[in-house]
Amino acid sequence: MFDKHELRSAARARRKALAGTDPTAAQRAADHIDALPRGAVVALYRAMGSELDTGALAVALEAAGRRLCLPVVLERDAPMVFRAWSPGEPLELDAAGCPAPLPLTEVVEPDLIITPLLAFDASGGRLGQGGGFYDRTFAARPDVIRVGFAYAGQAVEALNLEAHDMRLHGVLTEAGYQAF
Image (cartoon, rainbow, N blue to C red):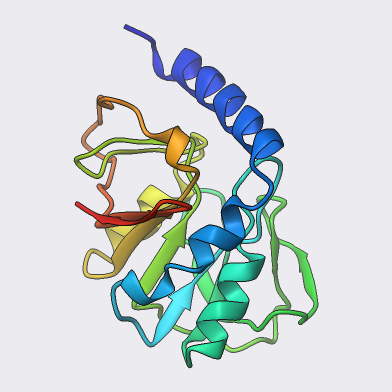
């Protein structure tokens, strides 16, 4: 059995390979937004590295009348906050080095959080990057709908979750939306 460090390394390599071989996956995933759970305010993320890009998803959600926001890390050991955002608005790096809306932007509460991941399983298990930002945020907002955004090829048979790991309600991939 892999330890989490080895599992993350293997999952990063798999995601990087998928990103290099399927340049239309993000657009195909965005074509399935009608299957997503309802939510008036949807939190996305700005893709870094080989994460599935949310650009097409942002445009589709906004066109469907959903309000968008992005997570912001203010303190490394605290839950993230969310600031309103629309495609094309300026961003700056937050305390974790991720692109985020500017400090004077309105803070909002999302109904639905779209999260990046390294791997997921059929019971809603999610392997993240290891920083705990999303797990802390999910724990602070247990009623928010949690949806992974990933390549279908990031699915694994099973993940060994720890007590602090929060399960997803579903995952959106280029193959469609799968509820857990």
